[in-house]
Structures are given as C-alpha cells and as structure tokens.
Length: 248
Image (cartoon, rainbow, N blue to C red; front, side, top):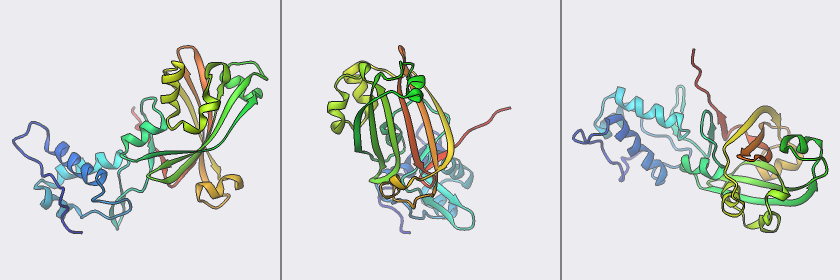
C-alpha cells in the first residue's frame, strides 16, 4: 500500500501525546476514505516509519482504534479497516444514528412498515401501560455506510408520541424526532442480548441466509416519566460486536 497523501505525522512540539496524534491521523485516513473498508493497512514497521514514532507508541494508537471498532487484527494476516461494524459495550445511552456517527459510519434507516397496534401483554409490561392501549409500531432496516446492520421493531405508546405514525416515513433518527416533537429526552435503557437466528422474513433485507446466527437485542428506553420505547432487534453478528471491560 502506497503512503497515503493525507497522512498527518505527529509533531513532538505539540502538547498532545504522540500516540493520540497518531490515532487521530490514522482515524482521519479511515474517515476520509483513503483507507477503505476491508482494506489491509501497512504493517507496524512500515506504519512506524511513516509516522516517525516507536512501535510502542504506534501500538497504543492501533489498540484504541481497534477498541473503537475502526480496525480489526487477524492473527497471521495483519490489520484491516473494518467494514461497517457497530461495537457495543460500556457506553452512554445513544441512538443508532449517534452510534454510527461515533464510528465514522454514515447512518441510514429504511422504513419497512408502520402500524397502529393494540398492546399485547409483552408490550404492556415493558411500557407500563394497559393491555390493549394503542401503540405505534415501527419496523426499520438499520444501515451503516449503506450496508444492512440490523432490523429493529420499536413499540411506543401512541399517547406519548402524537404525530409519529403519520410522520414515520420521514424519521431518520427516532430519538432526535422524539426530542424535537414530543420533548422526550432519554435518561437510561435496559438491554438484553441473546444469540438467535435470522428469520426467513428478514433474510433478504438483512442480506443473510435464513437461520444464520445473529444477535437478538431487547431494549426498554426510559425518560423522566418512565418507559417510552420497547424495541426488538436482529443484528448481524458479523457487523455487530459486544465488548466489555471487567474489573476485579
């Protein structure tokens, strides 16, 4: 791989640590597309020469980019720019759109269907409403850099989200719309991750064979008044990771 034209080498006269400067320089190459998704980056010796830093400093920068989900290391093969991958771990409560932005991916949403439904027992328990209460159900395909990452079905009490059903086709960031139109500001969410399989009804949209292993994610989001969203998602296991840091 030729030396990229947009590489900004660390400057020892600047106050920021060299590893941080190196991390930002490499991140810029990825965000600007000089290093494309799936491509292999130069080895550590070559990168160290290009940046003018030690291997220890370089490894600090590479580790941070790997933890951020921008790079992946393959034993015996090298380091590659990740294809659109969401890395879930200890993080603040954010929308899918914000997660994509953090990972320098272009978020996309395609509405599959929108319905008004009566809350079944499962929805009612999650949303703390009465069984049979009206609920807005949005089923959406979530994209990162144009590639399918998951299918999400959100359920929201209609009394709390007036106008959402009518405007569903225009909603890109659901949480952004809720803040602007309903004054809903998320404060926390509870999530459960399970290993499941891609259903036949989802296979074509998510571009996987039916029965392929996938993450099933159950999420209940809250604002100061209580739960406002009950979401069930199927996420591609090859484009969605869960990472945790454990402490003694």
